[in-house]
Image (cartoon, rainbow, N blue to C red; front, side, top):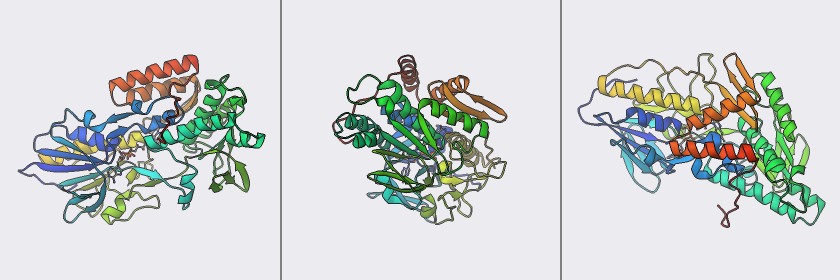
Length: 423
Ligand SMILES: Cc1cc2nc3c(=O)[nH]c(=O)nc-3n(C[C@H](O)[C@H](O)[C@H](O)COP(=O)(O)OP(=O)(O)OC[C@H]3O[C@@H](n4cnc5c(N)ncnc54)[C@H](O)[C@@H]3O)c2cc1C
């Protein structure tokens, strides 16, 4: 990290208001001598770990998102701009926004996250939406709820079966959570509401190319998750690489599966920060950073969160997790403050693993924290408390807790309206 002491206000431009961008801005706080501009193409910070609950009608969009402007309202030296960055000039120290406008920076923090990767098949995106934004969640919720409506009025058994088949691609935490939540919707929340179909007969397929689901977890927890999904009525299909996705459904390991709803949870690609900066990236597009999160060879530029590549203590790349992004943001806020105001050299960033969590359904989840492994209800309770705690804003915490309590006691879903528009 380069050291410098300046007399005028030092301008830090942060691109991205995810966990890391926001934590950096909060860390810089109201420090005199530092001026912060946070640019995001969305007006809200999104709590992605609960997005699947919006997609499966448990929560409403507003309950997992908060306006960035409102979160940072007490940081009087921070300006929030709604805009999309499209280029960076590291030599001239400027950032260019889509539609015109430039921002000059002294220090640049890029926290732009990642998006879906369809493994060289962008044409699949049309038929198999991924889950990354509120629009994605709304789109998936609409198609899941619509599939049951279409099945109710289907003219043939074949069409009914197609409408009631849900294929989720990718057996990571997102795929597992989606599959469990759709099965819960079909087998609990919708039961008794239709006259021509039995929603509980819906086929929910979780298709994974690798030999087991939840690969980052120990094998015992993976097999517990598989059994818990089977109890919910999910068919787990491992060792099945997807070969094609089109309007009719999915082809996996040579088998053609007719499905009206296909959801993508398999691959991610980092945002184009590497291209903007003209630096090398790994295959997933992540920018390699130094232990202080600075980009090698570029003065005053930092990349963090899902857009960055940094090895942990075990020499393996840190995973694309909210806790990594959050801790990096907190670290960088502190580090930049010390460096800009007191010319301090910060210690290297150290990730503290606070545990891997995945929820499968009502009363079923898995937690791994160092040598501690939890499953079943204790893991479910841990997951619920941790997620309420991590949500931004007291109001959202309260509403989400009440929603969950109601859903837990009644097995109903509170957000099942299909809007008339396409949103
Ligand atoms: C469905 C889902 C479930 C998940 N579940 C978990 C979980 O249970 N536990 C866990 O630890 N992690 C989970 N994750 C991963 C976690 O959400 C990410 O690791 C984390 O959000 C990364 O933070 P980030 O700030 O790097 O990226 P993001 O949160 O994606 O934030 C990036 C921000 O940058 C903005 N942006 C991007 N490009 C531009 C641009 N050109 N100009 C301006 N702004 C831009 C975006 O609008 C966004 O606000 C999940 C992710 C998903 C998608």
